[in-house]
Image (cartoon, one colour):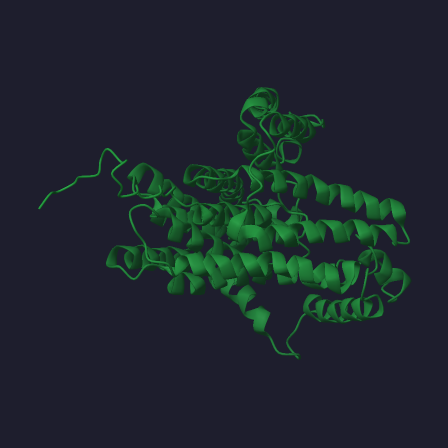
Length: 430
């Protein structure tokens, strides 16, 4: 019943708020995208158009309030890649052999990309970026808490059946990505009752992939750890927090986790069937891209091509976001998608290297959040198709907001002319 009340309250109360404050509509839409109420509480939340209702209110509110601010400033390359990727999805769908499959995939992506673009026009303050960070941490932290409780009670839901509508790999990559956000959000917060909950959520999120049997998730978590060593401010208090985080992570990882993690680096003779099939699938995806370099196989067409063209007995997932997009959308599609993240990382790195001051205290902290979380995602996504899960897109939205803040300049008034017509001009007679 609590899940139903939560869902209905956000749906209808949030729709009213979104008409006047569309940014809150973006946050509620992101909440539903991560929580997935119908999959999280299937016993109490019946299938319905909850996200669609919020989306309609968001679009109307966005229009009423003047369509936001389209001056993206330094974030223009990111937004252009976003729009280019979206356009190429549509172009590729026009030439796809299975039209119904292709356009359904375009619709699913549009449900992510349209609110994301609206968010790019609305995000314009430190508080809005922090709000987005906390929405991601709280939503995925809730899932991580529930998954940990299930495991401590002897369950294997995450490992065997996935979580909240995602398989174990997809869910674990979301947890890993949010772990980077939570840790660096905690470092940035100066109030203890915000800092320590963020650290607790970071621990829960980091622990979850360890019992989820996701090698991609564990490798992504390790990458966040390595990235954190380079990104963290070299001050005793921050280094103490990082060492504490490593100690907690090490204590949570048991022998079974270490054994599973070691299989990532197994040689050819020690590889299991899953690893071998991935390599063969990636080779076939590369061949599909080279044979269809412009528009690819078509959106959501790889699994059909695996059977119809490459002779797999059943429809097989590509087990890689990058190879999947390259096969389905061709070279332009994968270039737009990679550019989306490349410019995010490049521009966030530039912000990180700027001198920190009291006025821009949060800017380098946001840059660390973006870089650390994407380090985990980009590696983890190499082992699972993750282009329809929203969390990485919202991280990029944070970067767009950060760069818009960087573009803003305080107004400079023109110096008053030193003339006798100026009442403030002082004439001294010698």
